[in-house]
Image (cartoon, rainbow, N blue to C red; front, side, top):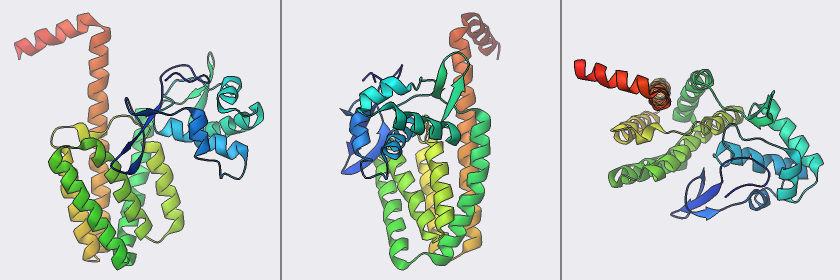
Length: 277
């Protein structure tokens, strides 16, 4: 679906197994920015509602990196005046989700490898702290809910349902964050989790990764159940380090693939090298 307020790809929202899936994807029921705005109707101001809708679209892939963000067409599509849209766009720019391009104006920011590394390094430390606190502070009910999520992950892994696993991973992490019973930590990690969704690829599509991740979460669960905060922190930080290493590997492989596609002579030379090996 082409959006009247942006230049580029479309946006679609899907629902799966009764869950609200915050992911824009091919197929499923098309959602316009106007429809998305309705989800934020309880915001304090119209500008806050517009900001929430645009932020959601950026984070979940409805507005792809490089897409232009122009106040007039966005306001027209969302049936609001230009003033709240301009205010929302300023907030997105301050947050780092949008950036000013010399030639194209305000666009959705494309996150770099350095952004990924920096975000992951911070997230590893904070997720380790959350896991430690969860081991100390989780209530019996919270532990059961985390266990249920791990069981659901196991079932999805067995079926090979990677899309569902991605949704369950987000829920699992949120449960651990909340079980820390530290509201500021929860807010920081939720923001980092949101920004991480801008990296379109998932390591779960790599061969063997779903089972590996499931094993990592099972070990983390055991540490939380055992109230071993030190081990829980170590496992959570190690898990995030693993994700970063795999993301970098995947990004670099994609970059090499694009380079070979853009330059056939390089691809030909690479093929000759493979034959020589």
